[in-house]
Image (tube, rainbow, N blue to C red; front, side, top):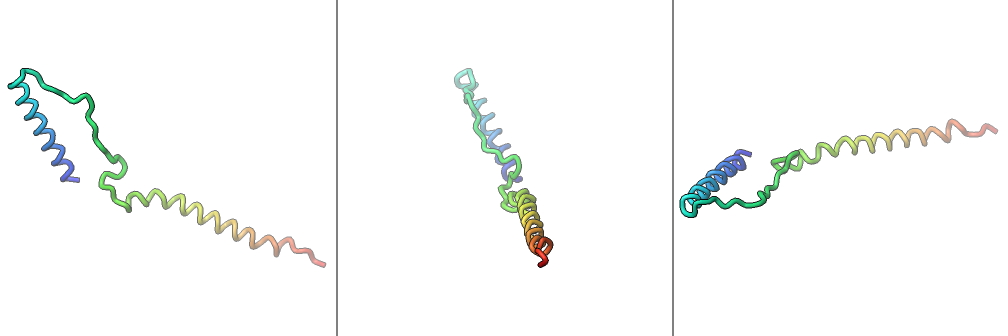
Length: 84
């Protein structure tokens, strides 16, 4: 995370320096129409553990409901058995 911050500062200083040089040589600064950057808002370090944590809740819900359904189905034959 710190290396990315330092890299951003260095790129900013370099672009400012190049803009100053262009201003002194040509009299105007050329700017790019679009600034493209890749950003990870939720998981900036791209750590797999952080990506797996949100998936635990749905997995628990699936497992718990499956177990509850199975217990309910196992009770049915014994409870509604005909007594003849």
